[in-house]
Length: 120
Image (cartoon, rainbow, N blue to C red; front, side):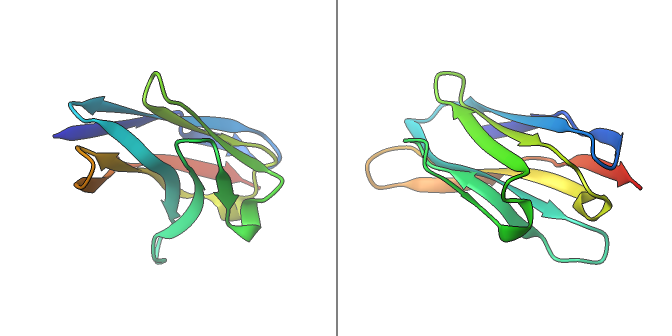
């Protein structure tokens, strides 16, 4: 079993920054893609950003230029640096990891979520 533990959420004012972290623990072979999703009240969970094991990143359009996703493979940790935060970024942010157990079998895991609130 794999656990994803997120940290770094909080309450900030518009224009400020936050950095989220998500550490994976457990027994596994490797982690393929790691990513961040978010869910605002009344909305569906949406994809924010992903990073592959070789460092290739992708972002949803609304965060491009403001958010940076990165990972430390040695620590099995993914980060999300969020700059120039806007009130519409307010949501619960979830970490996701595609964990590989062998050359064939992999499984997706979710973190418990961390609240990010941006006041205007």
